[in-house]
Image 1 (cartoon, rainbow, N blue to C red):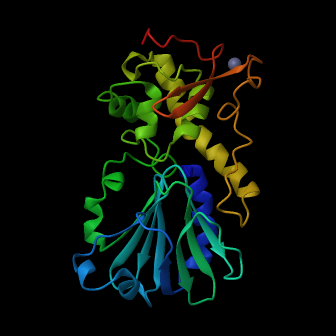
Image 2 (image 1 turned 120 degrees about the vertical axis):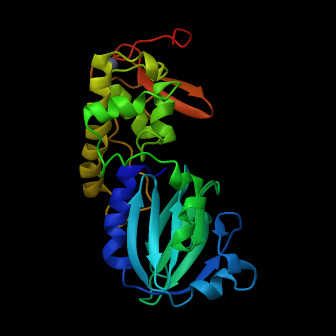
Image 3 (image 1 turned 90 degrees about the vertical axis):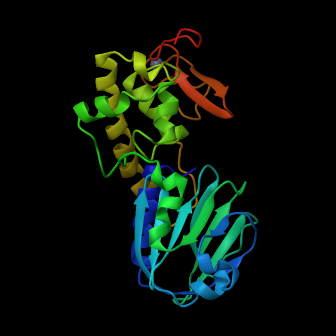
Length: 279
Ligand SMILES: [Zn+2]
């Protein structure tokens, strides 16, 4: 679920709370999500190695959060489609989807929740970052590292395939997922299944504008709406994503849904004309 705009707000909430706090101990409630990448993983269990380490930094890169820990350790949190974080009092009911709980010295808990356990939490030394594929093959961040139009056009050239897929795979620009790709393409009035290589100059220019304006505008809304409920998905303000059958806010036509590769794409046939087989 979390894409760059969500994670900007989650990070802003956690930064003053988590950084400076110490991890007392973790509890792994469900397997598969946590990956201990340390060479010493076999001899020193994760729980022992991470205990008493202080959280020194919290960065966001695309759709990932990276907590820097004292003594040369990092936690790279990649929530993918179904993961999320909670900052809770220990007395708060533990949701069934809770995968990992970090007890903090402050008495609070950082919880990683994941409905389908599709996300990953890597524990590693900073020089192992290159081994995390999801981290290494990312383009410049959609919020923090905007490309100029010329750079954007040049960087897009090697990308083949449908424009929506190019946006969500993150190699061109990182931090955009299924929801914000739909929003960006609606804003730019581009058919989501159009081949990126067939975009006109006008379309490229609209796409470039929308890629950087839509997520930023969303951050403003989310800052107001998310509050301390950082695990909640706030998506009701979006214009097309998740709005199948509702009216397009631009032209009033009905919003369409097409499911491809297990992902739903929502768009307006009137504002974003195109044909699946005429790419
Ligand atoms: Zn429309």
